[in-house]
Image (cartoon, rainbow over all chains, first blue to last red):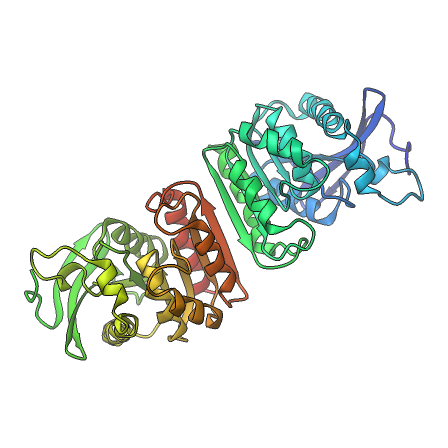
Length: 241
Length: 241
């Protein structure tokens, strides 16, 4: 479906009191498709959350939709997501995602930060400037932690399922101590992809004074539903404080 | 003040909608003083929580009072605490607590379990039988984890600030896999008393399917206020489920 979505705002759909609208922007020649969610109705949202998807997922992964809807319906908070590099509509038709190749390219993290900054500016021009948060697990932390480090406006972040691990381990080790906003960090105790020890080390390195680790049993993708739900309350509490 | 409180229920005091009543029982020749808190008013409490204090504290330590009052006022839940062996009113006048001596005595854990069971029966005869929980950090886990292992009626437990550590490490290692109720386990990331690694190991060993670790920066006694408050919501959610 690459290329179908024209630049700018696209179609709008409303489901269960939440308005979802597609968009696409161009950043340094890269087409970046996104989706934005906001509570239906006239009131301005009380916050805005950037949602970073995991490896192999995309801007409309079911768990991101659930987070976006919880934020909108329960907390009156808007959110948006973009397809990561080599994911979603940025992947050529019929191509398989190849995470390792994408992650190993030395420019990927900085390009992704630029993509987020472009999308943030675009979304804020419609939603307004309101307290900003970040939510992203796994690749959503691999790319999101450096993003937050370079985005002082971020007031609160939900991170996790990542460690000082993989092709960008050095970047994560370097950026983690510079974080200053409150962070909740999720660890899956039996993570078969990101070894637990590397995740504990990354949490330890995070510089934020207010940081909390939530560890639960289970494999990488088995974060308990209650933990997912609670993550939106955590973001909302800090965005409204 | 040892010996002043006669056996049975003692004086009652009411503060901010919470009724506190002292009590003392005898278990196998040991005098066990306690305190019980319940919401003021006619309604029966919706749950009962055993509060285990830490080393050097006692049944009326300020943080236990805070937990008991949150449980009563916000959640309509009763609670009670007893002085641990060699603590509070069980310590001879002018004596200093000597944790190591108490903990090293091989019978201490089993005696403490018997003390709790005696107090539970006594309190239930007044409060009624209602869903049962446990809350205890540090020595409150050292003694409380084996208590829960031997008390199937406990539906939910808040534990932490303890590891496979100290004179009772073997007992903790042995009992942890037998736990079955939902557990939230607090770890202080910079704990200067109980090494973090031993705490992570104890959490790993806990057999409960539903268990969550909450880690926060800081020394042994520096659990964030928000974490303490949230612990009562965790207990309440499971006691009322």
